[in-house]
Length: 385
Image (cartoon, rainbow, N blue to C red; front, side, top):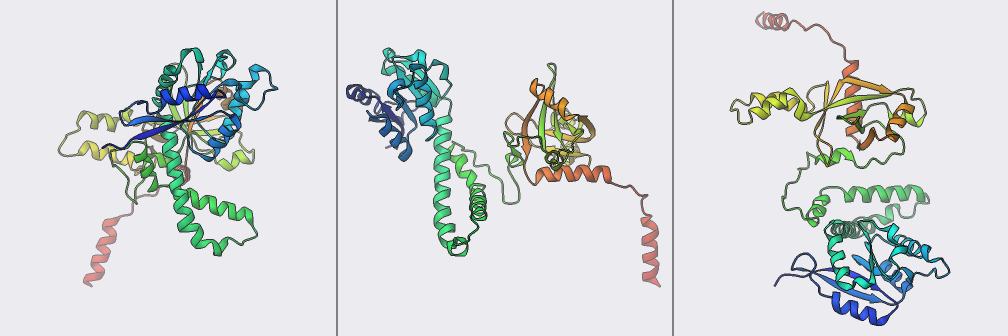
């Protein structure tokens, strides 16, 4: 018999009869797949509902606008207060099931839905299905379970076995950094493959210990509040889209020493001649076309740096001969106008590698080729003497 997968719904209403009707109708309802059903918990007190959200796990919450603890507030503020109270505790899709839909209609998003209670419980069920189709509840559940598993193993296998070595240090700031950075490493691969499987991955395609997934190159979206070396910028002028990467050192921005921001333009891999030749001859037996293409995607040409495709970023070839510069104010203006968008930041050590290769490329010094024949003739003569 197939195992049931339950999506847990908390239904909050101060009317016991309404709670009973909701539980009777929604409980055990099939949502998307035959093995996916709803499991309903009801609560008549909003504060107790918040306690349940804090201590337990739910995938959805359904409630009225006027159930919050802020009865002195004006009606138009009640929905906001209820939403803020829930957001302060956890992330969870919210369905307002209310006789006052106009009071919270402005709050509606793909994960905050508003239903007038005259539409009935079937509308609640269809809205749950609609939210599930976004896949965000699946992502939330998988991520929470993955982090919980990592935290469990981290506490049992690392903290408890090493606490005597560092737990008594008076430097609590260092201890906080130490614990957080070690935990962050635990969250990284190969455990990420477990998360991919929880998200539904069936390919079983995974990188070995000496190779990395393309996503390891990037932080998406970028975390910095100011531009940083390695930022991948998308430029749109209404007719075409181009990409470029920022190569001005990050420390210059921190120290406010940037008069001009330096960028290297990127060419989509599909547009370079070597790729086009390979695409037109993918089964060529002598492999000459793929051999011409390989140096671009393996960083074997000093002039170029390969950025692999992830999400909406295509495969890109950074070209150190295609350089542009912008004043910071001009960059800010174009960003504000939506013509420049930072779509990702290169993570370490790829950012450092990008900048180091740029410095090496422009700092290289050519010399005449050494006369190898002369050297070997001398060595041969010495050997025979």
